[in-house]
Image 1 (cartoon, chains in turn cyan, brown):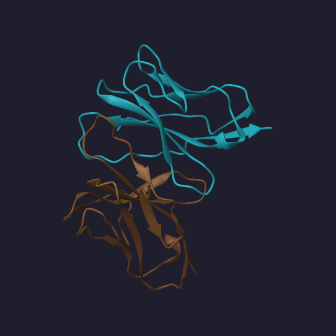
Image 2 (image 1 turned 90 degrees about the vertical axis):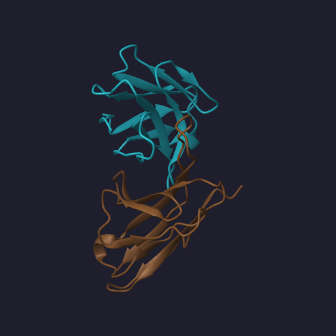
Length: 112
Length: 114
């Protein structure tokens, strides 16, 4: 799987939008962009994923650059419960059973 | 909605002891995974399984064994515990098919080897 680059940490004020960047300059045409997050003392949980078009769900939005070499996870109104480590992961859509590969992610702190 | 259940939640082992970390899922998922997470690090894959009777090594399999006799269960065995195996262990599962490809994780087992 291609590599991703994320900032080590970010900080946000409560109730403000948060934009978490991810660079993946070596992404291939069949790689899906996945985001997971890990709340303190919990296992990771799925947030969102996409291939080419921007995606929205109840948790977040995913904005994908036109050249697909970068993407941004958007939390529209950060809450204290959003404080977590966010992982950006590429997964080959042609791969049947290759597991997700986790990097160090971005640690998001939310200030009240 | 149990999802992925891991037991125990915490365990302290002495060097050389053995134990089995249990993982069960009730979503009829074919794929199951074991990861470990050291402090401040991302998750590293230990073993995975694509179905009952089939297992394969991940990035860090040394010191561990797995079996998959049923779809629901995927236990991880530590035969001779070492301090380097002090970590948090996460089990995960996902359904077959690439459309969703979402992995569901358990709450983890925190293991200390002293």
